[in-house]
Length: 465
Image (cartoon, one colour):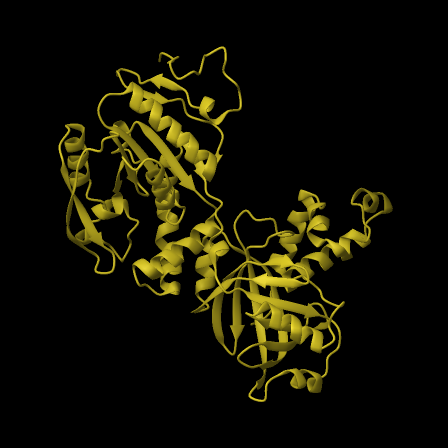
């Protein structure tokens, strides 16, 4: 294949490292059309965006007729967001969403990710029409009714660039027609969270039903049919967007080991407060590929009074506060098997006995943690200033522990093991006061071998629930 030099790829003034210089054109074999030389490195969402824009511009300069761009990836990876970002930058392009080519008569067991569901006849007919310079009738699919409800007219865009977006946009049936192949993927964990949030709004399914569908059909379909297609992409993008960053009204938490009496707690609560006790088991599930010593994106499956809830949450620390955005769904225990089929593993199970006092502004509770053999007091609420005020009234200032319980377990397991190591290894790991004040820094010093050992130990730690 002949290398194209008009892109600046062979220019003597080329400056290595510039994003625009990473895009090089090459002539397709047995064709007069150009494509880009595949970029070996996986790109971030932002870098991938600029590379795709540059590639589209160069391809439009060199190729005649319609420029077809395929954007593929698993459910929840961010394909639609990425495509919308490109559309906002280049409003003269056209977008074809493959979801609209679903044929409801082909749905088997509610599996919307089966490749046989796509009406390729209509899709290919639309592509041929656009290539011939004609306006085409693109179907409109309604997910809530699982039916095709009409058509819209799509004209040939002035830019001549058409993006085809969908999980099978790089399938064997479409690849020969596509000038630029783009894959967008994320980690299994955030893909799962984003897919659940999306389908609740779009399809109206229950969260547990969505997760079961993902573990039983979506993920196997991805491994069998989608993942191999993504390997053919010219540009591979990994979307590390955290779906929790957009959450509103997080919970602010102050935590202390200072002893507080029941009377002291009642004194800071309103007269209409409620008092209760409860016992919970929190099953922490480690996402696939995560480091067990430093993970901050655990799934938490909580058992309380025989009922199970799945908690999607993250936390950040703004000392002394722990700030935790979360969303919770009631599920059945059988969901655990589905999550483990996705690659989640049980990291630890935390038993907690709590004495709780709450009103409409704040919750104060004492927690006895069996694993840590220790009692904590927590002040929680949505109003940061009021949580701070209640903490001051309980005389907790100066005693706060700005770590979640799972972080504390991570830290203390590491500390206990390190203290039993030979002196020379202690020195290498720099055991000092920073270990307690900065657990994340301490955890990052552990070697990969030790991390593997801890994960194995966590997975063996099971209690009867």
